[in-house]
Image 1 (cartoon, helix red, strand yellow):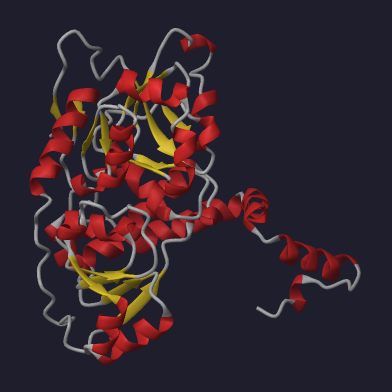
Image 2 (cartoon, helix red, strand yellow; image 1 turned 180 degrees about the vertical axis):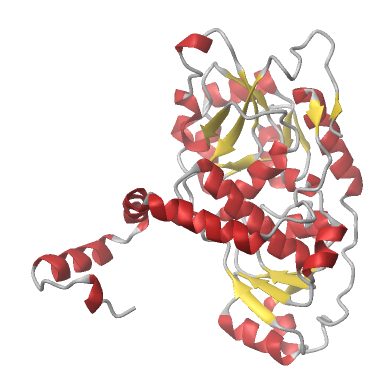
Length: 362
């Protein structure tokens, strides 16, 4: 049963309009952010594209309305499209400002918008420091994916006997296979460009979350993976690789973490058969996130995101079939993500060499 809270003087959940962020990226971690926000939405009236919020309009019949939008996300590929339009009623929470575009977020109109709708909940302390330096009221909220609700019965029924590696180099996956008798699977979270519908991309994110949820343990360098695992209570081993640009600031105490070199050189650094529990230092932050989002939308559904009888494999097959029926849209979208030299090579082979699909080497 969903718990409902109506702010005094505000619209009821039944009459207000609600939106959720959508994306065109390859990173399924973006959609996972939206699934976390859906917990606090009694309905979804609009899918609002993160990269084009400045052009958002609810339609002529609702031109006098505003759409409540939880703006938890990584901001963004094209900051020139920020701030959002006047038709967005925002909750600025769990926001990360892109490290390479901070100058764009220091524009006067952006800072004015953030001050007007603040205080800004920052996913990391690096973002909080930047905003504080520009006199924007801000606090460290953490990531909204910490509010994801697991289902122990779903885990029990589906099993959790494997080790899941997400976006790990192959040499590290091979090393992990030497350290455990359990099955070790390697996947990437860079998936969603192949799927065209908003609901389909969300379903794919749910399937990925099921893998994180049911794994015996997860090994990854990705924050988008580590935090949902933390929320579910799935033991997660985070490997430090490359530059993080402040994205992890304030959250490294939430999981067990090791440097790449020490992980490779010390075979006993992590026990994959009996993995240590996560530190659970995120629980107070989780409750604060829930309270703020619930107050903003007037709604909270704390039910698990997986029903005990849900079948991820069936969901995936149905998803693939649905996008197959719209395969031209899939092809068109994938072309946007293709490298120019690859497209030129394919065009040459099809046009000049008269290659067909039966000549493809894959």
